[in-house]
Length: 166
Image 1 (cartoon, rainbow, N blue to C red):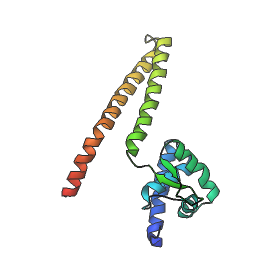
Image 2: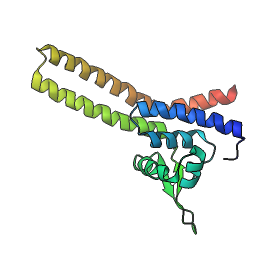
Image 3: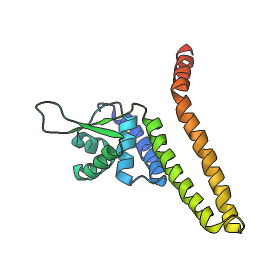
Image 4: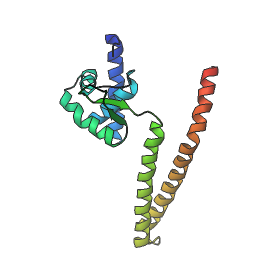
């Protein structure tokens, strides 16, 4: 958190751009900003006050955001012995595979609802045919994402080796 002022401004511009994309994907505004900040900043743990200072917002704005990020598993709450402040740590161990796993669950729920709709409506009607196409696409997407998650550990290693050789 000791970066020069110009580096901080660059970081905050990125945080706002990334948070906007996260918001457009359904994440609430302040959790999106806190997550983007924790992901891009160099520190590995923060108090709520440090997050507020880093994002230039009030500490009150941070409390609900960190609570939500802890609930979804992006942040972990810790406490150092002898301190009264909680620390928030970005749980970056397999972060994106965990995130995608949650998306796979959501895709499965969509698939199930669409399949139930097909059972109710049938495929003889235009709406039923559209639902059948939707179910097939969701099933395909689910398979592709599940395969990508399964392959990622090996791919990450391969990329790391390639990156260190360059």
